[in-house]
Amino acid sequence: MTITSGLPADFLYGFATAAAQIEGGGAEEEKASGRGDSIWDRFCEKPGAIVDGSHVNRTCNHLALYKEDIALMKSLGANAYRFSISWPRVIPLGGKDDPVNQKGLDFYNNVIDECLKNGLTPFVTLYHWDLPLALFDRYGGWLDKDSVVPDYTRYAKLCFETFGDRVKHWLTFNEPWCVAVLGHGQAAFAPGHKSNTEPWIVGHSVLIAHANAAKLYINEFKPIQGGSIGITLNGDWAEPFDDTPENIKAAQRKMDFAVGWFADPIYLGAYPQSMKEILGDRLPDFTDEELALLKDSSEFYGCNTYTTNTIKAIRSDDEFAGFTTMAFDKPDGSFIGPKSALGWLRDVPWGLRKLLNYLYSRYEKPIYMTENGWCIGGEGNLRYSYVFNEMKWHRIDGCIDDEGRVQFYRGYTNALKEAIEIDRLDIRSYFGFCDNFEWASGLGPRFGSVHVNYETFERTPKDSAKFLMDFFNKNVAQPKSTSNGH
Ligand code: BGC
Image (cartoon, rainbow, N blue to C red; front, side, top):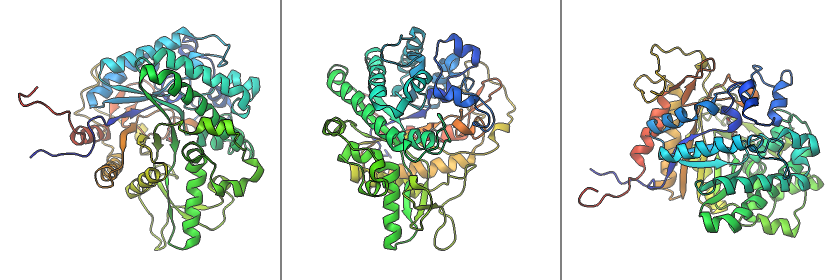
């Protein structure tokens, strides 16, 4: 029997990474590559900032191992690779009049060519949190909209000019919420500021930088290069704790603060009313010119999502969650899903389907799922009884058993399939995740479907990599063959 699947033939699936999380092979190598420091280099040197004291300059050595990594992804069955370009690798000091690092451009040219050679569609993020440190020192980075917007736009333009003949999928930013709140509100991420005014300024600058770069692409590059551009937002489903009107309202407010903050101005033309009410003057106003620029500036909705929370109206002191209380418990005292190695992450597949339906009906854009994954503790200590020969990554008979992650992906891919096949949503991609530098949590927590040995940089696929790729290979419609079999 032929199974006719609702996952379209051009559905993209594969692994997602970020430059700062995987490229570094060591301090010396990074220096030799000509990369400028980013705000993460300084943050890593701050005592206590990174849980295990690891450093962004030594992570997975993708800089040297990109060919093997891409071959591995291909051998596992992926058809796309989402990665980010490091701004300070291509413009070490970051500014619009600062020199370009040719070695940096060469590296990304090679990565892109290698993807295409292996039949992987490159899906490229321009900003995944590694702001050139020089720009932070010059004017405070994202705090100074008038300075940072032209610098970011020039960086984006350089990328479109250099890579746009081969890259047809662009993301301007990964998760502006994290840049604003974790970096400038809670001091959890670089640059490590704690404030209740800065995040709203930073968020505003990021939105305007996004709009400038996206419109530049749409107006000047798209007509020739023919790709598409959008933004990726983090957002987990907010399930009302129960069906009381207060809790339903609180859950919507949580969605406003997590997703609407960025998505509403871009797709609907204004900040959410609930944010305006709570933040008053601290939330900047848009000029008419900015609003016009934001309109139609994201051709799709890029969705990173990991979990679901139950939301209660009981007032918390978390302004970034609209003063709601975020939890995982249900009225009957049970939890909404099994827990992972990280406190914020539980396995709630039905939440994914609800989230996708919410996003699609509210913003009416095709959705690319650009990140999703599961964290297991203790995987760092795994030992395996066989050795990999270099360049022979495709031997996957001895995958590391990561049943918890397989379980997570089983539920989430099924929810995705239902959202496409039953709810008829336009969803076009799905990217899981590789072990890497988990920002302030260092190298400890592992999200990967591919294990990385941080001593030797050896890669070993886990069962979940095989599960994921098998799922998509089975469920994505294959291009139709003609009657003579060709
Ligand atoms: C980020 C990733 C990160 C992941 C897991 C997302 O917020 O985009 O860089 O590794 O979450 O914490």
